[in-house]
Length: 162
Length: 147
Image (cartoon, rainbow over all chains, first blue to last red; front, side, top):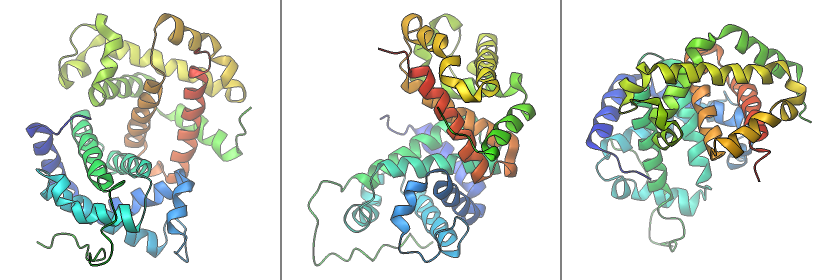
């Protein structure tokens, strides 16, 4: 996997600045598509009363995911360190098969194409694809490492508050 | 044999009747070369692929993009027998062109993105599911004759 160049980071930041105002809609749409197009992903949400793609729980989850993405943009220079806590959450608490990060990333890209067809050029696409792959890698970082166990508050995962 | 619902059949036929082949094909193929640069390995004879602008403006890229989507059209017209429809193309890609079949999936993803941009809100989750199922069958059929 290639590292993010300075140009990639610049492109991602500029594109995010354009689209972040719609991040809730982006997130809701990406999660909805994921649940419809890849129904196996619903297995992670069996605790939701309503697993339909446009349920309040799904929308809320979309918002949560995009807040995480936005946070990752601010930490783009050191994703491994910056996303450490989210990685622990996904590895030890949520136990998400990392293949699913790729699925959600794909759906985020599809939504970008739907909502921003002119701005989502091939140049932006490649940088964003690389960025989401780097985020996914950082989130999978803690897999296979020892569970830190008691004493680490895995639920104190909040996105950066600006 | 693949089972298609009425919704899936209608959706695929609808999408392909609406998109402009000479726009979507070139755009998807160019995007693939930009987003997944290792795919350029198969196109050494295409001239300047140095950057995104060069790729987008390259007439051989455009022509090949149109060729690809015309190939997809054959699957649209033979949805109940895509596997056999693509036997020769599969042999071609394996024996003559030596294309890693993983690349078919990459191109399929770029097609999804370009069609999504064209159709906008009408490219709903259900439409996306049908389109991706169709492309998955195409990709699988193209890989079938590899040995």
